[in-house]
Image (cartoon, rainbow, N blue to C red; front, side, top):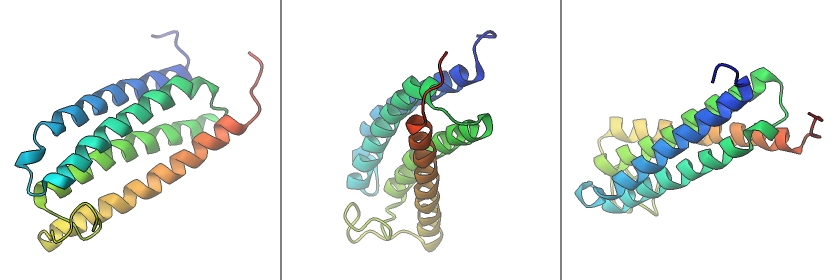
Length: 148
């Protein structure tokens, strides 16, 4: 691993995090019925699985992303924070019964004001981080490939 390029290490770390998040998504599926809002629990389960799968795919193509080192590192951290934050925020919403930001998955559910604020802040942060990371990933994949 010491001889591994920094880019390869980031790709491997994305895949490792993706595998862990995928398993967390599977495990959270076992407890959806115990949540304050089981429908939101199902959403958390699906977020873990889909975000884990996304990280596995992103890690697999990471070596082809043509970005300067700092931007590539930024994209890595945006994806790491965005995907895990997404699963965790929706998991908390399911546990607390928060629903003001998600009327389709939580009709009629309202948690304590501070819990709603935590979920709202988390979802807004996730939206920004994943969009920014996605733009960087797309830009890095659309750039002409350097010859090796």
